[in-house]
Amino acid sequence: MSRPPSVGVTTLVACLYRGPDLDVSTPVVGVDAVESLVTTIGVEDPEDSVVNCILEGLRVARDLDDAIIAVLAGSGGRVNSEREIARQVDQLVSEHDPDSAVVVVDSAEDERLVPIVESRVAVDAVDRVVVRQARDIESTYYLLKQFLADEELRKTVLVPLGLALLAFPALLAVSDSMAVSIGAIAAVVGTFLLYKGLSIDALLADLSGGIKEALYAGQVSLVTYVVAGGLALVGFFIGALDASSLDAETTGELLLFMQFLHNAIPWLTGAALIASAGRLLDEFIRDDELGSAYINLPFVAVAVGLALRGFSGYFLQISDVVDPLRVPSMALGNNEMEAFTITPGTHLAAFILASIVVSLVGVRVASHVSNADYGSALEGRRS
Image 1 (cartoon, one colour):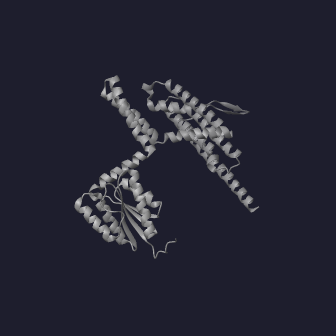
Image 2: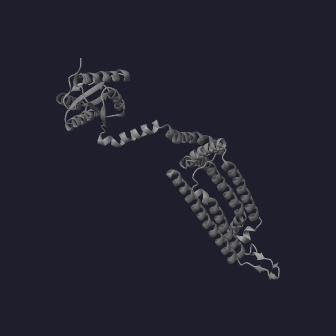
Image 3: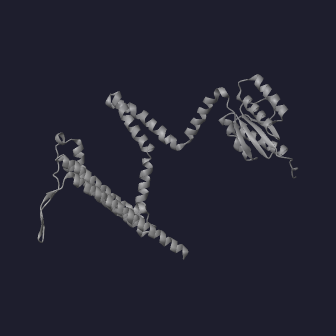
């Protein structure tokens, strides 16, 4: 038998309650019946939270144009109470045929009943009533509930905390020192927090995936990166070896660093040049549009290397750690050039000028290639 068409939009305001028996037959439907019920419950137990739930339902029903308010209650065990709520919802849907529903609850336990209503009628909103005096406690409970439901947060916070609490008595028994135990635990926990906070795990995962992809795809950059890493290690070793030959007490830490930089820079520049060239070859092999950044990167590496080499050499020369550059005498036919010494300032200016020229050449080449690619793309579209 088909139901008669409803006039207007009817909204069911359902106050859900699961707990001790209310000593009334539920569902309680209608404003008068619900007001009588809330008065009875409130007189018997003014501290019962269901009183606030029902009063909120009355307020919501008053604000809506065409609303039917009902109090649905279930008692007994969890399964029995949920089946009782489901039966009452079916009864209300059969008798009133609501178009939608607004569910009012007063606790997280009662909020679990919302899917029962949703399976039978569309739920427009869920109104959770929190008593003002207990709002902080209720909010804290919901935050803890959400925290414990998040597996990632549990692993990040609870696991390190639990391991620290387990490790503390063990370290205390071994070292017999409170400071050493606390320091060791703080160091481990701090390392873990930095590891997660800086997303090092994600970086390592991306690096591993990138290496696998490069191996399967046969990228040239993988080989050039390995070569660049080897050159960088050689540069660090040679720079440290040359810096260790100086007397730290007489030269000072700044000059030691300049000596290290002066000898390591050629190798480090070569490493950067090879790595950037490999990436540029990969882009060229894939027939992708060569971005200006990829083209300009080798020139930038050389320009930075020249600038750093010039400044480090300047500091070493004016400190008499390294002798100024001396050009020997040369004879070209009848012309003969006498030997001369390049001053530290001239030496620095030459390196700076060379660095600027290389960077400008890089910008020019990158701009020319980018414009050529753009022109080719336009001709392809026109054709």
